Length: 192
Image (cartoon, rainbow, N blue to C red; front, top):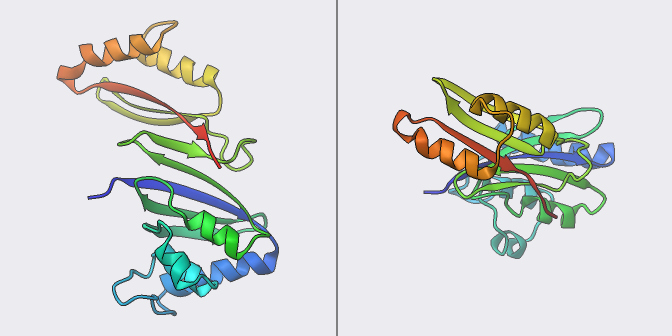
């Protein structure tokens, strides 16, 4: 069974290019268009790529294990949220080859294999740089932070300690294993 990653895309381009992508997604998700393969789900990313001109070889040679959950077109960008197996798929790469005038930003998070990545180095759409996933004193936390200072302030409050190291967090987690408490700090890496 796959570990599902949450991937968000913000795609910029001409209004007509963005509408082409949006209409392909909308056609499949709303059942107006039939999936490209008999056993494919309407939400499968591969449907969209084939509708936009991807060849059978492009689809078969690419890692496309993702499903579109939400999508919207606003004045600035086409925004897509998808669940993708193990991390970000090749959806953005194939779409970029099919429509080279698009600029595709993304962010992905999958805790099981520590996949936390984005290509949005300037934080235009995804300014998050840290994610704190914690369970402390019967409270769940899943908090994003744009700066290390913000993250450290929050984690310090959870640890009830002014300053800390990674080793301090590891020690705290070991001490609190019996009550199922934990604090995990994830840093988003910059990738292409």
